[in-house]
Length: 82
Length: 336
Image (cartoon, rainbow over all chains, first blue to last red; front, side, top):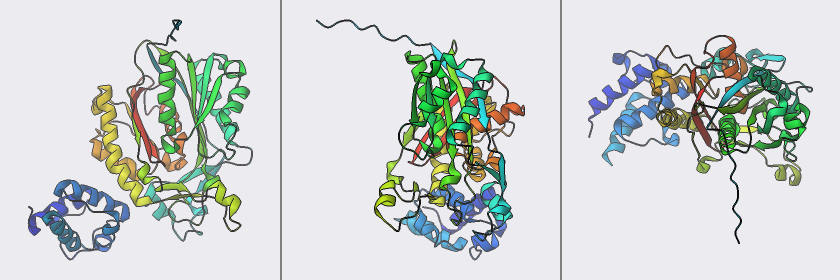
């Protein structure tokens, strides 16, 4: 099972790949839409890539609740612990 | 006594011999739509890649646009209408359910002397690839020598100008191909299917029954769960593209063109990434000027790529349609 740090690093790679955001800018307190230039469609791409990378399911209804990178890291941490 | 039945004899293979399109005269820029959806040209372009779309006028009916596109496709193929044994029209926006519009089109074109087999297909944005699959099998099965496949839509008739999710997406137009016999394979195995569990992801708002029975019902439009469709398209449809390439035994680097249904530029871009399509393979981006024309989008984009020289005649292309149903179909083809 991946640690919080590993999930953050993995998400940073994904966000970098999809939006071109610098890896070091992807921090737990950053908002996807306001800080990282991720709009709703890019967010779907991030989620799809994260599902693949961390072998978790993130339903559309839950995606709306993932405002910050920290929200996503915690979600993946919880989901992969089940 | 059981009589022996002589089987039909088909061609060894089939391919597309000609393509033609019809684009309505009226160009509608984003600026005409933004006020009613409280949006901007920039927002629409960033979410969809769409700059303009064409909307049909009263004279540019489903039949008229189809006949214009089919005439160009026949001329491109060098085939006379007389030689056409079957006309397949894929549309979800011919607003008269019976009879099929294909019969009027076949008659007016003089297809098969005006008596060719003719029927409509309802497979939304996958309709062109569904029609192509049928044509391929009809020719190889010996039921027709040449088949006209027409994808035609007047989506402006079913567009809700106040819906922020769809008002800017849809366009009108027609695209046609002539499919006929070939000595070598020109249409690869189809990878197709449906997912009825997500039938509500893109749908007509009111049924005709509701329109009849409910005095408060308004004329139906198309409704779409954009994020659900986007997720399905970028994830599941990229897999279908790979399967279609594998089924045809063609490597992604051997493609001379990638012509996906023009649903949204962002979907196309995500598919390119997922497919790891080499940067030198030309990709259809007709959506920027045409919007999403559903069943017409692939032949319209194909015609444009051939006309501009972006894709070579005789080259190898991957075509892939997906949409309401949900339905999908993809195959590798030889370009006309």
